[in-house]
Length: 496
Image (cartoon, rainbow, N blue to C red; front, side, top):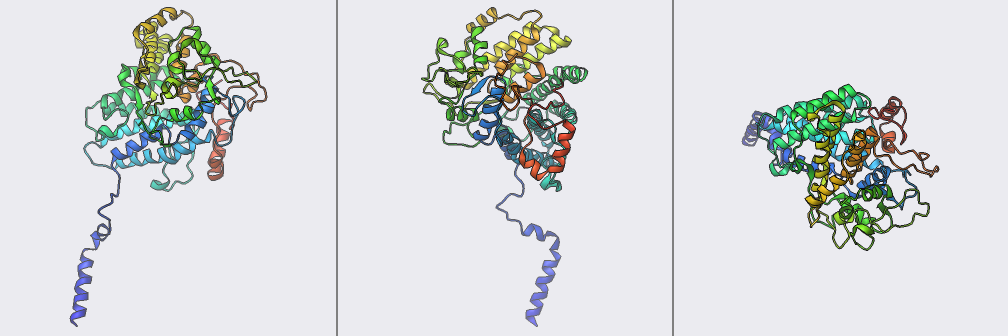
């Protein structure tokens, strides 16, 4: 009998504690939810690319050759396409970065922490950066339902129209910038790899991204482009190279993952005869006596002497190796391999060139086109010193360059966007996107009609085969909505 009494007491005791039983079964040594700061670090690191191999395929082998900054001598004719190469951006970003930014957003929306509102605003600016890169590469993509497989059980997300994605991204940047103006604290601190928890810099970045998205729309919605550009400028964009959005990597040469600059790994793995500076790019710089030649380039022997540099002609049928490596003084060669080089998501130079164009088109930003243009060129040369290791261009060289290459009346749009092209070297997605929407620089026609596009420069990446297998109904609807799934298919803002 005593035994049964003890059993009854135990049953009643556990019954009385039933409401807390789940908590009793939680391992106290393991967190049930990672901190927002930890998640943001991971997301920012992977936004630049989870693997140099992935970055090599879609950026160095495709986008940078597409806009004739580089010439690939290994994978065949320019504008060729290899199954799986351009899929990397979609698959790695949706498979890691997107899922985690959506999870972070949901966590912060449900949080009652005193920093939650500002933490959320920063996370949402990061989210716009991620999705803007994806939609600018592919066009219509999963957006409103993306990354919600675990949170809401949405295994087959629909594809949103790019016009709708842009509308939501712009509204998100506007609301986030407003929150960041309040002066409230955030919890990220040094875990924030872009701005170390500096709200003001995040606000400037939000408005600078808004300006970028606004300028993307100049062909398809010039009125909307002007309105959003004016709003971004009034809100306050980047004001110096101190405001640049970048990730600083580590000096870890044996790391094939996200801890080293992906461009360094790309170029050092293709440093023989496989990837070269394009003659189009080299000739543009040398015709203008550009001091960046000796910063971005070196010979096969590692010599950065200006006179020795030459580029690879995209129509050179022999695929002969010129006396040039890709961009060596920064990313490898000359006895110097900079694995800890920063990767730039948006620079002050880009912002100044957009301000110059906004001043020219609409009289915005004070209407002083020439000053913004000169400031952009100066910033584009100055920021190269951020690579460290003695890399840099003197103020005298910059002034000499501007004196030899002044802004010419009647050629403003051409010259502004040519300089944008040089300033974004290394960021093929941005160089390509700006070329598509502006039409500059005027690239060299490809003579090889046997290329996949018949010589036409690609306008986008095609959707991955994995999407056509795993999410066929939604990707089929997206292809019909967008008007095809070719390298030459025009997306919404890239109107004819």
